[in-house]
Amino acid sequence: MKSHDRVAGKLKTSNSKPGKPGVARQPEASSGAAPPAKRAKTGTDRGAEKRFPGDKTGSAAKAGKPARSSRTRLSKAAIAEMFRRFREADPDPKTELEYVNPFTLLVAVVLSAQATDAGVNKATRALFKVADTPEKMVRLNEEGIREYIKTIGLYRNKARNVLELSRQLIANHGGNVPRDRAALEALPGVGRKTANVVLNVAFGEPTMAVDTHIFRVANRTGLSSGRTPLEVEEDLLRVIPSEYALHAHHWLILHGRYVCKARRPECPRCLIRDICLFEPKTQ
Ligand code: SF4
Image (cartoon, rainbow, N blue to C red; front, side, top):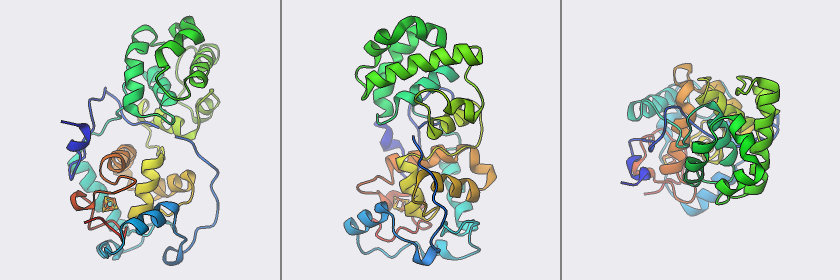
């Protein structure tokens, strides 16, 4: 059974290792948020409405007290119910990236930029057998790393970054992955999204790594109308109840990857269809 087949009304992750989510890159936040009723449509909204005109569902979620964000159109009760369902369907979601320790998680996330998790896993299975620590990665050297990851896009730059971040971990952090956002983001190839993934998956912090899937799901459902990943991240951290904060990132990524797909969301089998505010739902 393909992994996406397992995720209809019931979210499910694939084969993953012990650990959790993964992935992306953040622009600066813009300040002003349009009022919910008059907000500008995002590219995601516009494109989707052109493709799926008609449906008027979603009004149930508009009732109730608004969540604490001017960019969030869903009520607090609707958001709580959304995540209650995600948790019920998949109580312990995991990242689909394969890794064996915080270092290999960090490397896998760096390699996953503009690449699929499946493609990264294919390359890292062999790489991590020979280099699962910064010291071993440095011994492998840039050319050696390239050989293992040459099936992944941008592999030359990524090999350079993996080597250099390994060197810096040895020089500055005793060979360990730091549990610190600033220290993580100072590493080559590591941006805000990658740091969020590592903090969440390796260290259990309730961060929100907004990738293309989360950005789309948040805007469609009404969780956020942020125009940048950072705005969406801020909204989600503000409105998602704390009891769901640790896993929210995975639930939203998996929902976007397997159900609320970019080109044609699978609304008929979506477990939050009656909550989602996306108007042109698919039939
Ligand atoms: S798949 Fe679900 S979340 Fe996505 S637009 Fe359709 S109803 Fe909304």
